[in-house]
Length: 191
Image: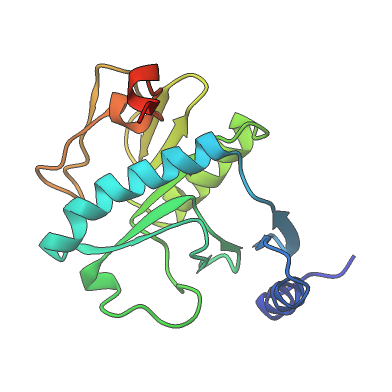
């Protein structure tokens, strides 16, 4: 099997788009991976985290927040898209109309129903090894948030805990319980 390139990824993505298919394509070690839609719980967790982060980042002009469609070409020539990512303003003064050609400062992976934890951790650790400041794994099934940094062991946060990332967002706090999709009461759904 031949080694695939970014140009090959672009051709596959163009073909999918032309066929009306909504798949994202990633390149890892010369192999193309097709990434289909995730379950709606993971999607909702992603939007909740993104919204809470972006509401802090943009008014302070700290940088840029991207969703799972934002692809990054990494120094190891891989093309990948974290579920949520952040790049400091000083590192990306203007977004290109192309893939980001840098390592995000923050990468977030959200476990979907079909994901296995080990590949997600491997992906996060690769980002950290390439220069990401922080990697986060959110597991909606266990309702945990695991934070990875260059130094030290990962820290696991549960409901009742507060996520802080002072290296990137001094003063920002996120209650872990705010990440989980709400369950609406019958009274809330009436009327």
